[in-house]
Image 1 (cartoon, rainbow, N blue to C red):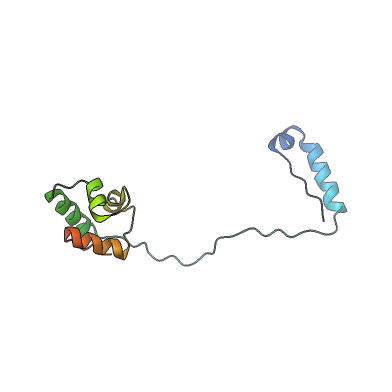
Image 2 (cartoon, rainbow, N blue to C red):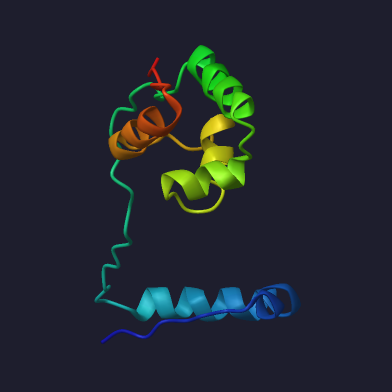
Length: 114
């Protein structure tokens, strides 16, 4: 197995010539290189981001306000985790189909996807 050199920032700054010389000698003397493969993200064509239409978000907020229900209370009524309504209403979270059905059942508003 080949030898590897790991240099810290201090060694590179403080003793740059010595480090360069050692690396150069090792590269010239090394005949068998070990290939190292790192994990890479698979790139795929990006679909345009799915969003909930602003009109239906406003309708949900309006309906929630009519019922005098806070976002935290709406999370409890629907059985969602904390801050789900906050994230949905601020376009940070795209609701699942189950969440959309639950919101429709409790608040009478179906979230439209644009």
